[in-house]
Length: 117
Image (cartoon, rainbow, N blue to C red; front, top):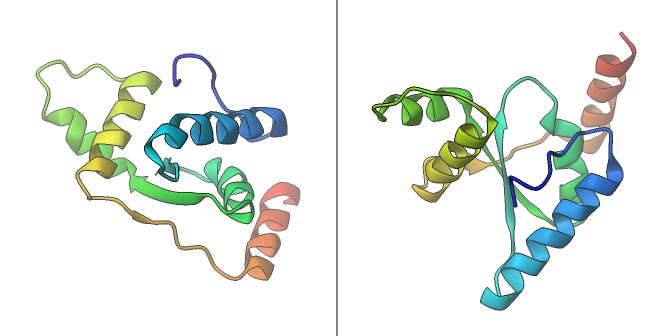
């Protein structure tokens, strides 16, 4: 699925596609999909807020954790695909945490400031 499409935070259609794909992949296992992000800068915040408002589970992985996971390999190449695999491995190993977000009013104020200033 990661090879098929990149998700941009300005494209609602792409995020809805991601949610549909997650539900489709989890359905045979009677599971709920969990959307895991590498917490770098703030690009993931609007997508996370949208997913959370639609009842989706989210978690974050620190960039330092994925960097450390990459350092355990002999080949030290880096790209989005390798980062995505490392994020999944860190999450699967139980080294990530649930995403904690402040009250929605604070989130809105932060988003407003980030967008307009």
